[in-house]
Image 1 (cartoon, rainbow over the protein chains, first blue to last red):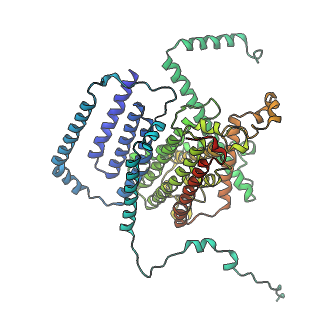
Image 2 (cartoon, chains in turn blue, purple):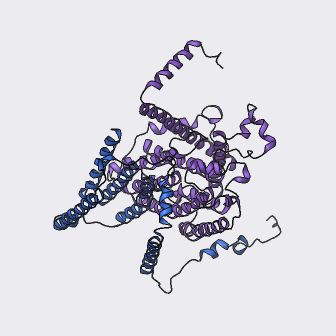
Length: 200
Length: 373
């Protein structure tokens, strides 16, 4: 009972926030709505006892990806008029993709639910069961190739991004921080011993 | 003890307790948890209040001044005087600001700082939520805290504030990675993500603390923690000499007080977490010594031998003191040097030490040799 009420209230907030992402006029507000959406879906996962996924969603998306997103959006000059014209122009495409995804999701749920009672809820996990450990055990044994390939692709993306943004300009003045840190007082200041001067 | 309390008070208390146990389970659970949360929150806020006093006293002494000494005995009433002053001041909202975000930003920076206490074990039984992925929860919530600063900077609609927010965001994202890697080392050594289990893994006196085998990670974690809280010498987000007050330049009254509270709550949090991860949390440093064991039942001295909240508090105080010490000692870092320290020094150090730790665990060397697979 309590579980159901909580589920629907969190889900409602999530849907509202998702709508807010699309309909708010200010891009920064949109980003904040997206953050709220991620947070709510993390809560829903937590209710489904997928604690590892829920916390990682907050850690990665809310804590890192969206911060950088916010960073970029704040720096960009967004033309709101142009964006509004785009909404009606791209609406059919957006609705089409949304319907396609909804169809896929329904197919998936229908396929998976064959022979499984959906309304039955989750089987209670044993005491001391940690899905972080369970996930790790599968990830590093059964799916180790997929895991490693994903890691290599990410590394490639990092290298590519750095290469794209790196510009070498000749003749530019750069500080060598190592040199600056290594500097000692005697390199910069010379203390001169001298006798006190006579009173004039 | 029982002689001091009148019989009818005891009777009423027992009757209330008996009635409480007849209530539904969920209600009992909710009540107890609410009280637990209340105690922790009030405790943290009191520690914050007195650490502002303590900071001014410590820095005063280091600079040959006396510090606050006017309000109450030894100036102990100073924090309360400050709070009253801030509360009765007007909250000025700049006319060109984004009003809602401007008001909500201080809350967004305070809530994660308090919510993280949910998984922190204060002694062997007092923990609000004893969850398995406690360490991940801590990492997730500390990474959320940055939103308050960024939104404050943007919503104010001032160049100084925006610059402060940008600096803070870049800095926190950079140091978070080093912090996360340092914690990877801790969870490898402790073999668990549960903070209570991490403390238990360090039981048995100073020699068992992770401080010793994980010393490089401890240094990285602690310095990154100082950087995460935007404290001196990493306080470029506020940088008085360059950008007035950074992200909270337009904040006044209660809104400013909340930012202040969040900053100090974060300091208390980082100090406590460092104590838990590297200094054995609530465990006593004299645990392993057998000749001290008979002292455990002696009233006051026994506290030295047995673990508990007092040890966690003492360890936290050490780190709080170092925060103030840093502030009185070091000049502010230059921004490019902060970035260099985070990305080019701390991250390589942590990665190398994780590899070293892995090799030592593989060859069964060191304190974690007992943990295999």
